[in-house]
Length: 224
Image (cartoon, rainbow, N blue to C red):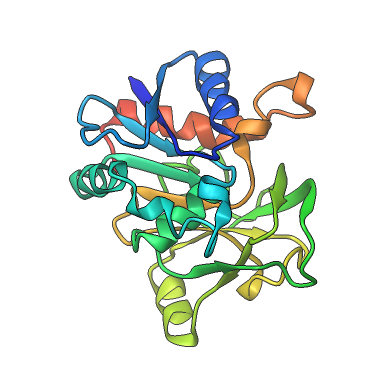
C-alpha cells in the first residue's frame, strides 16, 4: 500500500503526514510535488495542511489550479481514497471535489489548540475504527476553518450522511459546528482537524490513528 503526500509551495504539514504514515501506520509513503500529472501508482492521496501559495486570494484558491489537481480528480473518480487536511480540505472545496467553502474564523483570529471532535458518520472508509457519537481529541491550527454551505447544500449533506465530524463546541463559526465532510461517493474526505499530529503518545495522544488506520483497514477490504 502506497500513500502520496502532495506538496504545494507553502505546504507545512507534509512532513507530519509523511511520518504519520511511515511511523504511525508502517506504510510506504512518498512526497509528490504539485507539478506531477500522474498519481496512478499511489493507493491513497493526502493533501496536507499549510499555506499553499501563501493563502493569497483565498486559502486553496491558487493551489486548486496546480497540475496535480487534475490527477487528484482522476484518481478520485476511480474511487481511490483522498484525504485533505486543513489547507488540503480548503483545496478540495476550491476544486469542487467537496461541497462548501472555508471562510475566515468567526472572530478573525487564528486558532491553534486541541479540541474535542464528535463522530457523526462511522460508516466511511476513514471512520470504521470509530463509533457514531464517539468523541476524540485532535489538534486544530487554522485561520480559515469556518465551514459554510447554503441551506440547500446542508440539507443534502444531512440526507446523504456526508457530515463526518463536528466540533463539540463552536470553535470557529462553522455551520452546525461541521469539522469534516465526505463526497457522495464516500472516498474523498476533507477535515480541518489534524489526525497526522496525533499518531504518537509523544505528540500528546494517538486519536489520529483511528482515522488514518481506518484508511488502511478499508483498503485491505477492497475500497469504498
